[in-house]
Length: 228
Image 1: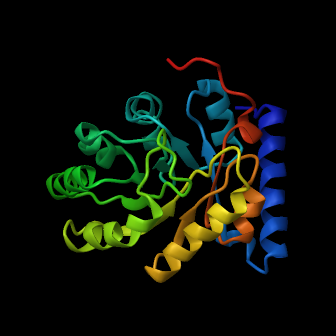
Image 2: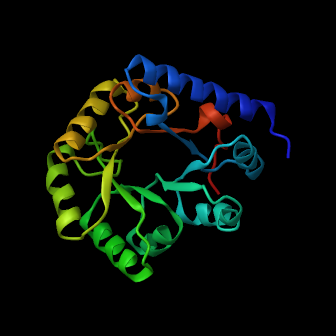
């Protein structure tokens, strides 16, 4: 299959920017993983991204991800799927069955559901806790002051494999302070993975220690205005 030139070129450009930002921060470029946010993208552009060599993808919804990836998984043994959107407790089993990483764990009801699903399915994806660094009412995530206690409960009460933290800064605020806050919470809890930074601010996130950046529009172009 030929790769549309815009997809291949966009991915190469983003990887170059990641490498430059990492080097500027005194980090190895390979310490930062590019997550291609494929939510709502047409299948032909996702196929083109796969053909360009991209293997880590982020999806917002369990059902959309199932439609897109269940049949494709067999052809890509190195594929890594990350759930980056809010997860309902009643979808926990489906998420555990499909995703390699769940980035948006944020409440005890969901922690219990994930723990039950992991036990039942014998499959344990990596789990990140989403922190609502801006304490925005419309956003998911544990508030910063409750993060330490929640991380402790997730580990000790529910036995979940917590590997890191994720955040989405407020759109109208400087993201650096939110990335710095997330990094500080992660460091004091011994968490190595930081999923932070998107198309407009991933270079700043890398400066503050991001290990995974979630890039959608800068890779694929603008998404459709309406969701299916």
